[in-house]
Amino acid sequence: MITFKLEGLKELDAALGELSKATASNTLYRALQPAAELLDQTWRDNAPELTGGLKRSGGIVKSSAETGDAAFRAAKRQGADSAGAVQAKRDALRGSAADRSFAELTVGPGRAPKAIQQEFGNRDMAAQPYFRPAYESTKERMLNIITSGLTYAVSGAVERARRKALKAKG
Image (cartoon, rainbow, N blue to C red; front, top):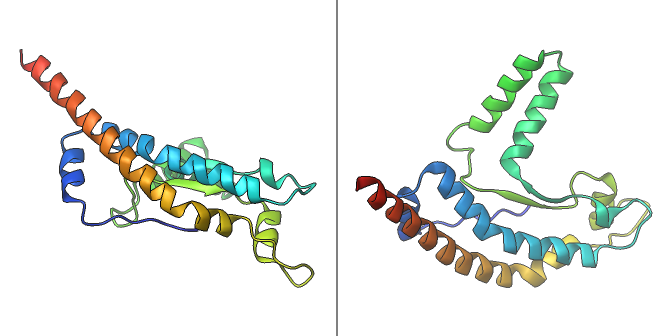
């Protein structure tokens, strides 16, 4: 898994602070989505044709949703009733503040065992990397997309929030 962590963006943090948590999170997802789509399409273009459907696997997933769903399934497997499984999902989504990201997308082939075998190889077959080359060839474009997307999406959301607040005041 490749993770980007941006630090030192005080102006962005201040602007996001003017928004509700839900609006800020949705704004960040809108800014990240085009870069995620670029990487998703590029790895699919690079992936070898297999009968196992590697190119049709995975996709773009909001990681928090995946985390909650995994906790729900794990609780059910351990014998929890529906209420207990829902509580496990809520607990996983809350997590500790240190573990939480405000907006996180996961891009790739998902958990298809064939995906790992193709990317890294095994004792019976040589590696046929497709994801890492896709990342390497798109990382600068993705950073530019994210930067311009953040500028546009956050400034627009803040402006809408300010207009809404002024309208509410009278």
